[in-house]
Amino acid sequence: MTAAQETIPAAELHWKRNLVVCVLGSFTTIIAMTLLLPFLPLYVEHLGVSDQAAIVQWSGIAFGATFLSAAFTAPLWGRLGDRYGRKLMLIRASLGMAVAMSLIGLAENIWQLVLLRLLAGLLGGYASGATILVATQTPKARSGWALGVLSSGIMAGSLVGPLIGGLLPPLIGIRNTFFLAGAVIFVTFLATLFLMKEAPRPRRDVNQVKTPTVRPWSVIVDKKPVITMFVIASMLMFATMSIEPIITVYLMQLHTEHLTFMAGMVMSAAALGSIVSAANLGKLADRIGHWTVVTFCLSAAAILLIPQAFVTDGWQLVGLRFLMGLALGGLLPCISSIVRHSVPEQVAGRMLGYSTSSQYIGQVLGPLTGGYLGGHYGMRVVFIGTFGLMAACAVATGMLRPVKPLAVAGKG
Image (cartoon, rainbow, N blue to C red; front, side, top):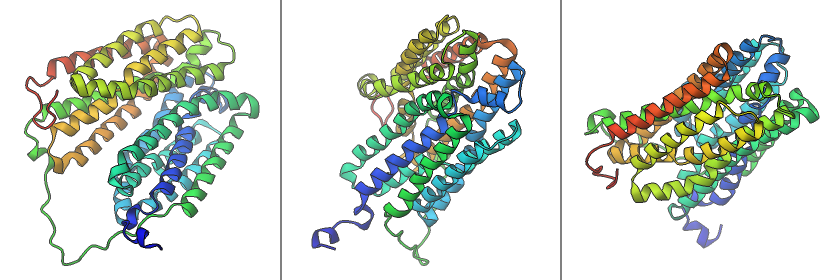
């Protein structure tokens, strides 16, 4: 080790290599989580579900199952990561995802598919673990850039996943698509195991006096903005995810050619729109206020849902989903900023964690509700119902916006 290296904290010595591995791992695991969306109803039908209403409903159950198990186990993996190291958690997540994805390709009935999707959520969590590792083991002067690169990799995975899921099944088959995804994630496991270098965690002094536990809600002066954003975050994910499981069946009813490819295009369009608009909406929020941007984006997304219920061609749906993605791109960052600026520093991490948990609730209930309504009352009902929900959220943020600027943030 050189003299220059000795002056660098151990936690920051290998940050560039770790960043490359984390971006690769997050990109591949997000692809694996999203590639089944375009052909999930077809796979459900392949597993013996014949009634169209049942296909839509089971698609929603299978899709939401992963988020259900992830919501319960994420705090556990977080605590274990604090105790035993982030690298170990990333090794666990990548190997677990590789096994789970391969097993999904071997499912013989719908119950096995749901259980294996639960297993995928139980064993996953690579992207969230990678975010924490990069944040804690990157030089402070470069941490913003590094987290931005990692976030781009995650968003790119959300964009590429449905496209791959739309292209591969007609070429190599549905089951082989899962096997290939498992193999790619196994490469991520190997890279994490052999290339990632995490600094040893400092041992806790047994004689160190424990700091008193802070009750987070007791130190928040105005709880209304925080609770409002928790509800909005949950409803946002509910509204977004309620539509995902029904898109393929909706396109089927429109007699769309190249069904899985077009479904992948529709699902990726929203992700592409979010990638395009996220940075610009963030800058706009810094200038005019986060509450204003949240209200405007919710209103725009709600309006764009109405024509989606009455499209006659798949490409129309692609264009509308892209425009909706433009509106949705700044919502979650603005919600996180409002939460962060509404609470004291010592409880900010826990409050942001609660915000993530509220998003998980929406990600679980959204597909279940969308699948049920779409299967029993028609696809258009899902779009109209989601419009009503998004419009109600827009009205709520407009009415509940604090009258005075937040003391910490300086802007509303």
